[in-house]
Length: 99
Image (cartoon, rainbow, N blue to C red; front, side, top):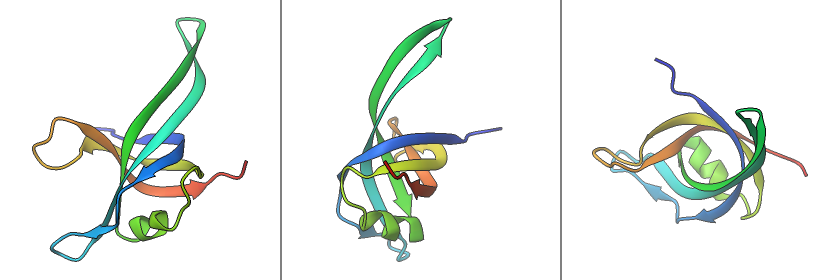
């Protein structure tokens, strides 16, 4: 089954970098997306915030980014942590977008 999401968004909040008991760096952030999409033949303004979770090397890289940086994020949707009902984007890779 496919579970892949690509999203252009702006980094708007960031928690402190933390480490799992296994020593893996983890970073929880909030990103904001704004665009115009077509739905049923009509243009629709879309704007939302989403939690984005970075792990490992991507967490260390993302921790150095300034708030307000535009990013192209690639990853998958899953619960924020085991047993949670709220989902987040778990980022596998990202690119900085030059404005």
